[in-house]
Length: 473
Image (cartoon, rainbow, N blue to C red; front, side, top):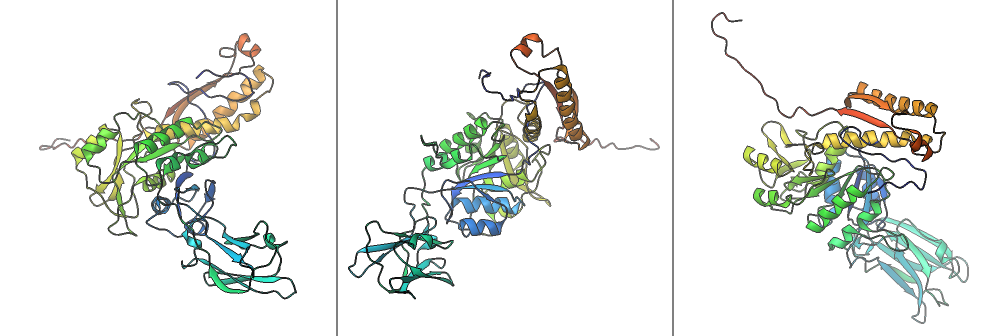
């Protein structure tokens, strides 16, 4: 793609001698798109703990995709999420229409988010009663939610819209002229989770009015790992890779964790990646049995994403333990792990005496320069850090003084990373007349050259054991 020189900005070019910059922000935020019991639709919601998750999105349930992947991530210690709730065509909000003495519609009680959770037949459901108000010409609205009740007194058709709880809102029916009849508690009904989805619900859209759905909600939201909870279709895998590839420095560079379909044999799994080539994609395999759901197998995306999010950028996920699973759908032999590795798939399998572990640190890239997850991620961190920290340079005087200050600042960032052993070494940043000749200055283009040697994982350990004979030393 050709560079644009229109709006003042910072651009980073990545090559074999110069990476691009990422932020001092953590690489631990996971973007999750899935179905949930409650919560706003197609809105990014930040979640930091299991308790907060339950409060915002309802109980962990096996018939919804989001909780299954979130559970896996929580079990790895992940605690920073951006959650996007989606739903299929059937998704609906529970309601109750209150009638007046002429049986005409008067006031509508409506749950604050779609889902079965608010149906009055559920343990978490909502019921509404109407009683006579303390003042003439008013009523009381009584909201019963679980074992809690809330009473609103002095309700009229004019002020009804000002009354609400965290679970229910009220509004006047258009054209209503009378307050509702006094009635005993009646249940809200009609709520549906929209658990049956299509691929398009996950892929999402960007509408003409700027509203977003599905994965597109995460386009402008910073996260470093993204999953479409429990999904394994070709369409969704492609959408995840496109989403991750299109995310820029403003939005935050990211990796996508993909799933194979359930019960996919090793040979079939290796055939899936033939057409996939992405330094920002990871294919996790196989499905796993959670410790909380014996006999149930779920896609591994949340488990892998949670483990990756807990690692420093320069650490490979290879050989890292996966917590919270009883078994995998299949145990893998060395030959099968080798075949999966050659197919750019990252398997989870049992290591005798050491639990379930990730067996390589591969991305889906065919380019060996970028087929290691930790190399990709540490360069993401460098790129975003440099990008964030050098915003001050935009529109500053294009002079040697500015060049020197910029180079010194970048070198300070890299020196700190070297001291922290996040990178192995770096060359001094080049920002002088050699890469900023007069024509570049006149064009208002300031160039730097940043050269970093990353830390590689010690994946292959060869022990040489010799037998000593006699008095040999």
